[in-house]
Amino acid sequence: MKPLSELFSKLVERIRGVEYIDEQTLQEISRELQRSLLKADVPLDMVKSFTDAAIRRMKEERPPPGIPVKDFVIYVIYQELVKLLGGEAEPDLKLPKRPYLVMLLGVEGSGKTTTAAKIALFYIKRGLKVGVVETDTVRPAAYDQLKQLAEKIGARFYGERDGGDAVGIAKRGVEQLKGVDLILVDTAGRHRNEQSLLEEVKAIYDAVKPDEVMLVVDATVGRQAAAQAEAFMKYVPIHSVAITKMDSTARGGGALAAVAKTGAKVKFIGVGEGVDEVEPFSPRKFVARVLGMGDLETLVERVKAVFEEEEVLEELESGRLDLLTFKKQIDALLKLGPLSKVLELLPGTLASKISDEQIELSQKNLRRWRAILSSMTEEELRDPGILNASRIRRIAVGAGVTPKDVKDMLKAYESMRKMSKMLRRQYRLGARGVRLQ
Ligand code: GDP
Ligand code: MG
Image (cartoon, rainbow, N blue to C red; front, side):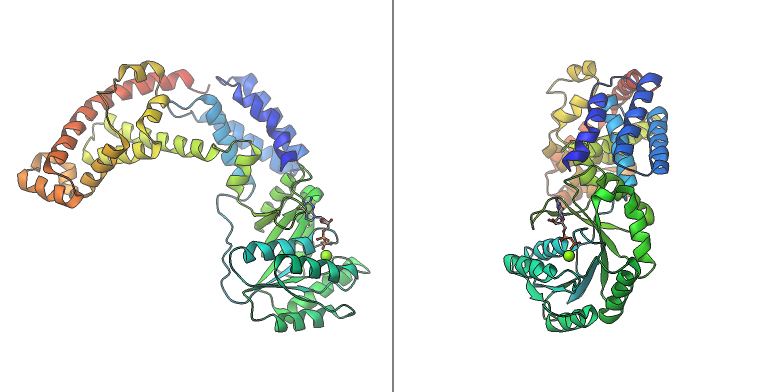
């Protein structure tokens, strides 16, 4: 992954220095984005629409209050990159039946045999029994290669050293290994010609009816990955893709994007020659790493929470303040993390105006309040005026607190309401200062 991170490092460095956005800054970011994506071999049309969308968002959306412009720019790029590489969904690694049968295919040297062993080990480590079948009879060394790997990782192995009939080997292998949880069938990648390779793949597919067909693609082919996928798709369905050698080239970025565009799902990436160097592919984690930010997820959560907080404040301003809004606000605050962190997000002058005593809203308090609010009825939330002693007692019991705690919360709610109005005005001022023009 290093080659890709290196490619984006100049962009990230550029963004780190951004304090406000003007036309020139936008153009520089746009150029740097295009340069990085093109070098990663992302298809041209995808580069163009990606950059257009990201720059438009930077122009039109404004960072939420308290979020520095540079963080907001990274947030936008992160979100768009995740979209480009297949979206937020995490790969589904569960095996829905037993034995689950996976057939690997791909051109010669793409890394099929290595990937078969890597995935076998991935599931062995999770406590499953795994078997591998070698059907590559074109390369005599293939048999020994997978047999040795299988011994090393503790997978069962089936192959026929002198066999010439790949379809027969596949059938016998699956039959022999049917007691395991997962069977991986490795195939040949070289043939007299492409046509005969594809026909053999199809014949094995028809003979063993795999639950999943996994295409293995070498990252160095970059955007050509799409053409490879499409060629195989004419013969057999492709359920998942493994992209190997992500450690050795930045073109893996283009391979990932191109595959995402075909609609196929990248499930694993190979990140080294070692048999344990494979990872489930999660666009979110991947992008965070490429942008060199382990804490990017935290930033994203924070930005989202501030947006929610903004919505609550909008409601406050519109005069629809009730305990329901208060509850929402507490949820948003809890998402933002400890209050000291929340204060860091506020414009400096405001943070210094609020003393420690003024707001001793520790996480613990917030949680207790949320419990209290949760045990109130909707009617009570809308109109706290109806809260009498017996209602307060009922609420306290429901929340596991004392009636005094309930009253304290109601008092805090009153002062919070006053403070919110002030915060609202301050937010406005703060937001204007960092608005993207
Ligand atoms: P096959 O012909 O498709 O079965 O490919 P192999 O599994 O034999 O792999 C071809 C070469 O690629 C071998 O030298 C592997 O060590 C290497 N290889 C496979 N996956 C990776 C990877 O993720 N990273 C690196 N650096 N090399 C890999
Ligand atoms: Mg092989």
